[in-house]
Picture 1 (cartoon, rainbow, N blue to C red):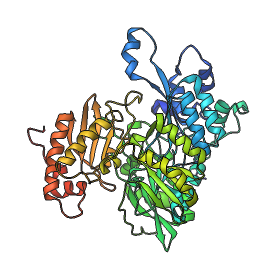
Picture 2: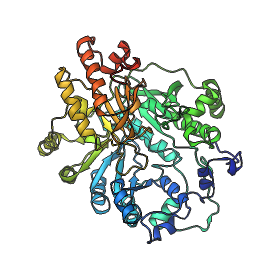
Picture 3: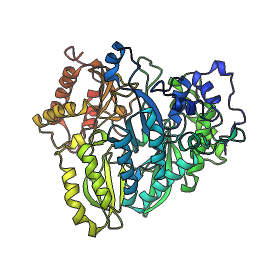
Picture 4: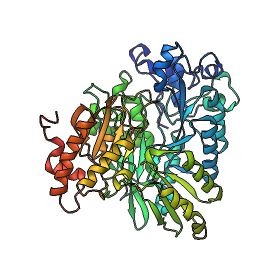
Length: 564
């Protein structure tokens, strides 16, 4: 273990307040147990506890649709909680699916949400329901520990590990990475599962990787299997790209320094692509990951959280320093990077067969939200299903491992689910984050705006004969970019109700360019109409929309007076 002897190299008073919260939390305990028992308020009154909740996979939120009404009545905000699960590689069994469905209906708002990090979120959970919800989750061998907070979060991997032996091994590696980098504190089990409490606090307890202050900010890892880049591997702090030779994994290219978040109005913050720094053998992946995490732990910015991600550590110290520090900690040098090619970022839909001959079914889920009749229908399928529910980083669902004999029985149900509406290729390729009314950071709508935006966008595509093009649209309610708009061919980042920054020309290994700031829907579609019209008439054979925008200079062109 690459342990640091002293958790703090500077006095607490000089660091961000969150560092003191973590250091004094008794390994993530704080006063969470006491806050849970406080029935006077529907929230956690202590700021320290609200920060520590995140390490347990929980965000305290507020229904902002009710904010003004409750203020007028002099009531406290309509507090509710989001609970995010840790699900490395995004695989759940039918038993787990049924349990999560029942928990969402009993303790949440009746929906399951599939996230861009390949896991589940419960929304609309009240404080008094947090404990029974988490106990129900843990009863089916799942948990929410480290799904949020200043730690390594849910490790993601190319979706559906049951399609081939290579995908299965990568999924196993994602699970092993998640377990290795999981906080070792017993606080989660004490607070939520009524585990045995340590007699004198955390005496004798320690975090061998994280120490008492954990990481400066969140840390994200992705594993990709070419030619699929459905995980957007370059968007993450650390990435591993599988090198496959003769059907076996020969190694992994290592990427570092990706991150999508930025702070509105702060030019010192920015989205950044990860860069390939070399390759390693499969058996070295966990060692490399721990070493990278330890560098961020020791050198990440603990004064300014806006500049605390690994991408800034890398930019401040430089690539050569970073690689040298990494190899010093590893005790060996990374090998040279190996060639790889990504050709797809979207998910498979409908029926397809895996390497073992079993069947798989890809189901589109708009914005990842499963509720109502669709939630009930999937529960009915889970009752008869012997395979797996595989979540994708595009917020969709793949039912994997369907036996040939079971296909006739499941096919009518699945086809009915898949044909609730005839989604366009572009809709299937697009994303939106939750945003309003619950996300504390949201500045504009995203999920609730997505259907309206896409309907108008599809009409525009049809008018130019582009209805079969899978043009990627991603909408985020704030600059943090949970829907990864900075890698979209068309990206919207919320600035205010009804106002967005418009980004153009992104791709899996290409950042989109900010084209116009703080504009409304009318102006957004004025721009899109012009560039789609030009794309329809001037594109080259096989040229994607984002590639065209870059080749033609659209993504960097100065807007006309009409647009600006």
